Length: 114
Image 1 (cartoon, helix red, strand yellow):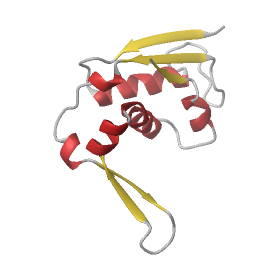
Image 2: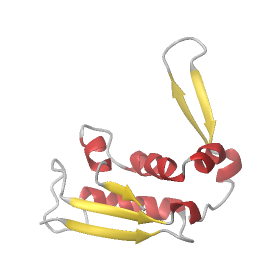
Image 3: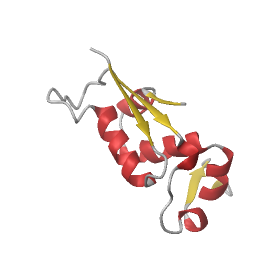
Image 4: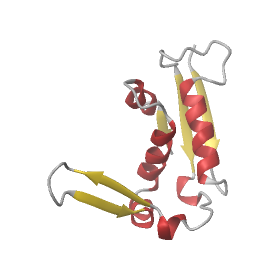
């Protein structure tokens, strides 16, 4: 039983769509939800570059990563990340809404873009 969802995110708020996608990826919209199983659900996202960004996300939001070495903190502004690859940015937002466990990467493999 493979379910496939197609979501057009044109002119929709980033956070609201991302939380909806995270819910679908986990299978919480089904009656047979199991938190320890990756459901056979595929989600295809359309028009990511035309998503609506509310507030001052483009100016103020930043993503950080740390290499573990002194001076190894890298800060990437949201605007630069979104302009270079909106799909990667959307994945990062959805990833933050999924549980932080072994299923995280497996759930994200069911997300695709067009």
